[in-house]
Length: 448
Image (cartoon, rainbow, N blue to C red; front, side, top):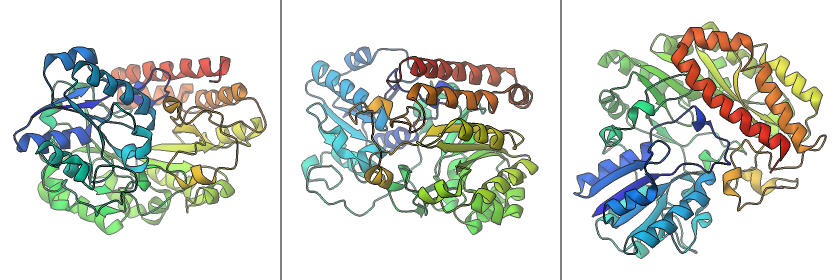
C-alpha cells in the first residue's frame, strides 16, 4: 500500500505555541516504522513546516491510505483536508487518529473520514493496512462499540526518525533548538479535572532498557521527554539516572513534573540537574488554594512556590503553566504579576480556564460558554471561551497580555534568555512571541 501520514497546520485563528515551538510528530514516526516494517510504501507530510500545498502532494502519488493526527484545534482543518483527499483521490481511504480521536471520536464523524481510530491506534492502523476489515476492528470507532483492552507496540518498535530527516532542523522546544522527543510512560496517575491528556489511558510505563536503547539512536543533543508526568515515581527516576550512567548517555533533557514531587525529593532534583536535565514544566495552575482544589490538583500554593525555588537553586529552568479564572478582576492580575515576579525567571504560559470537551471540567462547567463547540480552532486554551464576570472579554485579553509583558517578557527576562540561550534562540522565540502578541491584540479589538 501507498500510505501518507499527515500532520496538519493549525487554522490561522488558532493561538498556539507552534509560533516558537514545533515538536517532531512522534506518533507518525511510530506509524511509519510499523508500516514500513510490513512492506508498505509510507511517507510523512508535516504541513506545519512543509511549504508544498496539500493538493500537490496528493497528486504526486496514488495513495491508498491518507492518515491524519491532531488535537481539538485541528478537527475542522482535518475535515477540510479529508474532503480534498476524497475529491483528488476518490479511491483512497481516510483515517484519523491521535488523542482527540481517542477521547472525543464523535468530533471527527463526517462523510470525508472513513475510519476513526479511538483505541490502540498504532495496532489498529497496521491491521487495516495489512488488509483487515476496518468495520470488524475494535479500535475503529462506531456508535455503540466498547473500547478494547490496551495493546501497545511502543516497546516492540522505535519511531523512525529518519522519516522526518528533511524536517528535523526545525524541531525545537521553546529555548532548545534541534530538539527530539521521547516517551517513557503513558497517561498520568493524577486526574486533574481540566486535563485532557490524562483521559486517553491509564498510567503505564515502558521498559527502561528499551528507553535507553532508543535514546542511543537519537542524534539530537536536546531531548524533550513528553510523558504527562516523568516524575510519577522517585524510584523510576533514580533508575533512569542510573541507566544514563551505565550507558554513558549524555544528553540535555526537558520534562514534565509536579510541584509535590519537587518539594518531596530535592536530592533527586539535584541528581537530575547533574545528569543533563535543563528544565522542568510544572503545572502551577493557581496561587489560590480554592482554585487548586477546584481543579483537583492535589498540590498547595506553598508547594508550588517551594518547587520553583528548588529548581532555580539547582540551576534548572522552570517553565510553568497558570490558569486564570472567570471571576478575576484587575487586582487578581496584579497579584499574579507580583507572584510570578517573586521567582527569579517567571517563564509562564498563562491560560484562561478552558473546559475542554472530554474532561470532567467540561461536564461540570457552570458558566456560559460563548465559543461554539464547532469552532474547533478557537478551543486552544488561549481564547476566552467564557464570559468574564468582572470585566469585558476585551479587557480580559488585555490583562493576560499585560501579565506576560510584566513577567515572562519583561526586560530582565529578555536579557536572561539572550544570555543563557544565545541570540539565535532569542530571535526565534521572540518572533514567535510577537506573532502571538498581535493575535491577542486582535482579540482585544474583536474578541471572537
